[in-house]
Length: 209
Image (cartoon, rainbow, N blue to C red; front, side, top):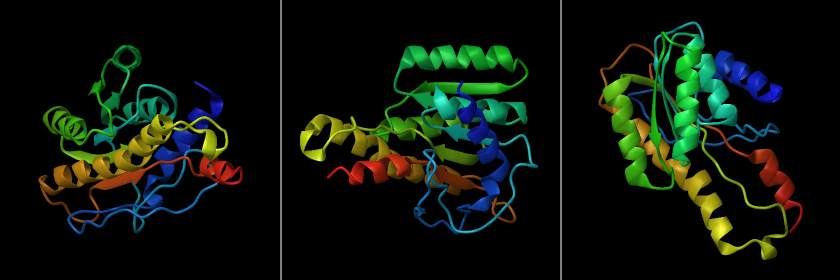
């Protein structure tokens, strides 16, 4: 993996307490701008997570790139991980590699298009039944259109980007909230939802209009 993926994954894992969305006082996440391609963590307060291990973690878009790098960090910390990706063969290859690298760990996964609410709900059920209770849900899956003038971008590219980036985050957050509400209550902010985006890419795209 590129070095910046590894650096961002380690930073995200160590700094996840910066912003959290806790249960049962659940609120929809809001976005904050960021210059990093990995986007912004979304939530409403502070809590440290990196010192605790053995958590259930869901990462969408986890078969490659930053999602895969984060999965490695969580498994190395002793957490249980569920991944998803649209490409089934790439996902299976990622699962095989992670299980080989962390034979004592637990990593599960299934294909999922995050723009499809039913598939996201099915992912939540997989997580409940395999690594639950789920403490951390990361909406990492995303898509971008080709870098050109908006007038020249095909409609299907725009629809795919909106589906993955907007609907994917909303459906993922909804599934995570429903799942976490059904889990046992715990003192303090026990459950957390994060959204990663492409804010720097979006900023550069806006300047081409």
